[in-house]
Structure formats: C-alpha cells, structure tokens
Image (spheres, rainbow, N blue to C red):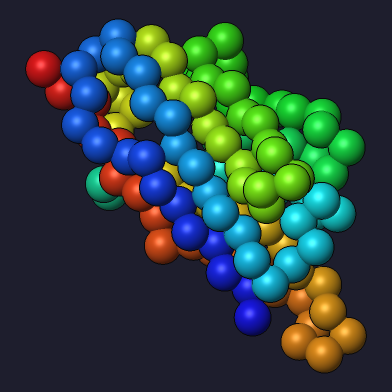
Length: 120
C-alpha cells in the first residue's frame, strides 16, 4: 500500500524559511518522479515543484529561486526547502506521485498535506 506522509509545515513570518519532508513507503522510491503541490483557500491545487527519478528539477515561476526540491533515495524521502516566504505562499502543501500498477491500474497517490502559513 502506497503511503506518502508530509511534515514540517507551520507558521512563519514573511521572509522566513521552512523545510517540508515527504516520507514514502509502498513504492520503489528511487524509480519514481515526485512532486509537490499546494492548495490555498478558495483556489485550485497547483503544481509547485517536480523532481524526476534521475534528480532533474523544475519549478513553478512563482517559487523559482526561492524553493528547492530534493530527494534522499536512501531514506525514501523528498524535501522542499522554502525560503523568502511570502503571505501568498500560504497553503496546504501536498506530496504526490503517479502510480502505475498491473494490479491496481494507474492512479495518483497523495499525502494528507501539511499546512504552511506565512503571516506577521
């Protein structure tokens, strides 16, 4: 059974930093492309950052230069370093990967999310 568990969210002042973690189980983590999404109140969920199984990364324009995605395959964990945080970064942040299985078919796996609030 696939499990994705986020942690590291919290309340931070503008300009501050946080480090989010996503611990994965039930998958061969090193083979998977992994993503961070976020959803602010009243808005659609949006893609924030992507890291491929090979370690290539890509970012939404709104976070480029401020956020850094990384992974530790030995720990089955993905990270998102959030720097220079702005109030508009306030959202629930979700870990995601796409599952393709001969048994279960193809589907999206999501964590439950971790809340990031940027406020003075």
